[in-house]
Length: 130
Image 1 (cartoon, rainbow, N blue to C red):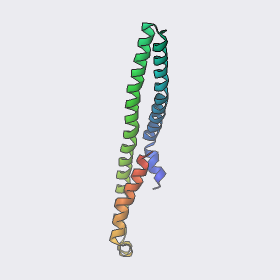
Image 2: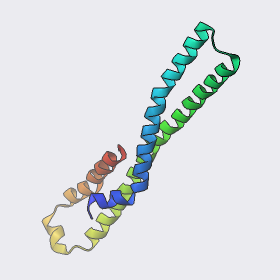
Image 3: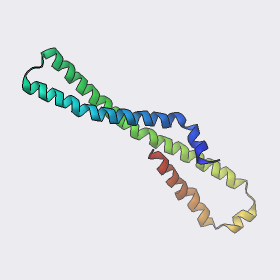
Image 4: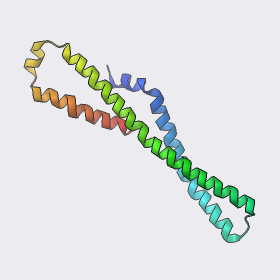
């Protein structure tokens, strides 16, 4: 199977990671704007108490949601990478068990083990950085 086949199986997770990234970026842009409005309004003294409370609640809510989205934005691709690594390892092992003895005489054990461990780990690491 090609790598895109494995990625197609995780389409929802990839879309979710993209949405979380956009949400985190949007909130990280909005938070300084909200802070500016709060500081400028407080310094000018033209904030009615109710309006100030709404801006403070909005600021704190945006900060909390941004923190949660930022955490999820990092955790989701990591889990995706682990799932893809598992599937790749499983399918590669299944493929190797069906090969004949001539293949194993042609390849060294060290090279095969390197491909099974480090190469697949690097692919999974690259995919978890989505």
